[in-house]
Length: 118
Image: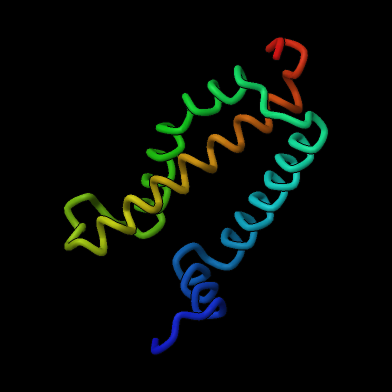
């Protein structure tokens, strides 16, 4: 692998997760993103109570993302070998935390809008 291109990254992710699961995850992420953008456009602002609740779920998202990747790659914490592995590990955790926050905020805004009183 001489160059890091989008096609290379797609091939790597398809190899790790399998084509069906990878493209399902891409589709789910796209649907959640569209829902989040819809909520932001509809409400014209962030509801602070919903935002706080979404942030409280961030550690859960980080742990679930790490667990999911370790499960799919059949890895353990003892397999972490160097600084690059730790950077990737932290990147997965950050992406999982942000993704969970966006998911929770979107679900709260779409389905529990009246109950939170923002």
